[in-house]
Length: 321
Image (cartoon, rainbow, N blue to C red; front, top):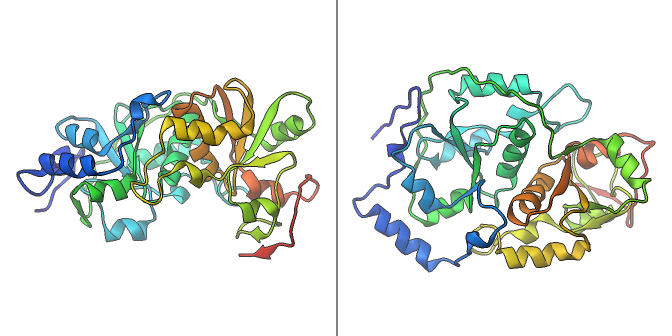
C-alpha cells in the first residue's frame, strides 16, 4: 500500500501491518529491559515507541529520520521525512559542523512542509546521538516542540513497527523561527575565559579515550588532543548499546555524571569532535538529570584545533584516522 502525505503527514501509516499490531507492540516491549522514564528529571522531549503509536490519529506530528539520505532510502519509519546534519550546517566557516543560521533552517523546514504548530519526533539508529543534535539546534532557536524517539529505529523495529522505503510526497509550508535564545550554546571565546577563570567550571569531553588522549585524530581536526582542564566521560556510556539502544535509567546516568564532581547548578561545558556527541550529553544532563547550566560548544575540537594559538593538551602521539 502506498501512502501519500500532503499538507500533513497522515499518521495512520504508523499503524502496524496486522490487526493485532498494538498487542504485538506491548508484548515485545514487555520482554525488553524496562527503563522507568518517569524517574527522569523531565521526559518532555523524550517519547517511547508505544507512545508514538498512540499518536497515530493526531494531527500536526512530523516524524524526522535524522540519518544520511542513503540510510533513509534503504528503510525508514513509515511516513518519516529525511533530514541530515549537513542540512542544518553553516558552510561559511573554514571547518565543518557549525550550526546553521535560522534562515537556512526556515527554508529547509518550509520546503519539507513542516509548520510552526507541528511536533517533531526525531530518531536515528545509533543511540539518539544524531537526534540529540537536531533537538539541540532547534532548542537554541527556541523551537521546543521536539521529541527524541527513545531507542530510535532499533527500538521501533524490535517492537514490530512498520518500515518501508517509500518516497514521501510533501506540500511546502511557511515555517519561521522567532527567537535566538542560544540557551545551550557557547563560543570558543567564552571557553577561553572559562579556562582562565577561577570559577567552578567543568569542561566535559564526551569523545572516547583515544580522541581525548590525542592518540586518535579524526578527519576534520588539525591535531589530536583536548581542551585544557577537560575531563572525560564518553557519551556512549549513557546508552544501552547491548540491548534497547535507549537511555539508561536515571540512577545509572546520575552515577555516571557524579564523576564530574559537580553540583546540578555548576557550569558544565560539553564538547566533542563537532558538537554532535556533546549535544547528546547536553540532552542527558539538562533533560534527564536536571543540570541547570549546561552549554554545548558548537565548534568543539574541529574548531578549537583549527587555531594554532589556542592551548591544548595531548598525552600520546597522534594517529590520523
